[in-house]
Length: 255
Image (cartoon, rainbow, N blue to C red; front, side, top):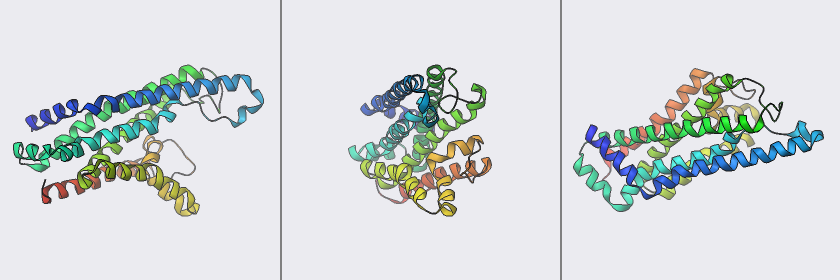
């Protein structure tokens, strides 16, 4: 297993797109910080409009970019090999296909966990520095320590999304197809849930990947329906279903 893991790590580092996809979240964070700084300037110059301001959260603005970039990286870990035919070599060198998938999942987990937490905490502290002591709704109502569980949960959800993307890439074998599926999961289905009657829409919205972080952190939300253990179960369920389907397909289908 160690040899397979080392091989997968080397292949990820060798991907030409890996660096760009890891730089993407940083670019999103910089853009989020700039937008937050502009909002701060508007806050200072428009006292009469302050009740209409959203929270100055650079990390929140960078989240979609981070999720998409790291999901794309996870997809390319497997679809890149199918595109070049390298998957055949990988499976000849390591005939245990489940071991290959497990190694890919471990590498993706490690990279996205570190990257997700770095971006989440960088966005959090950038927001705190920019917003300063400005009051809500633009500023923060609690202490920095109070926000740590949500920041950690944001990073964990990025890892969950990436593992789901790896599973989709393995099943679909197409970078474009897997990316479309990820976009549907992250952006289309939540909008569909919002359009439904609240009795149904709130339940479905709570199950969406992008809405799991506050529930994982135990942050009270008026429309959330999941407890912390429930949110953990849903997050684990996403990963188990995606990688379980990937394992079945990888074992049964020719490379």
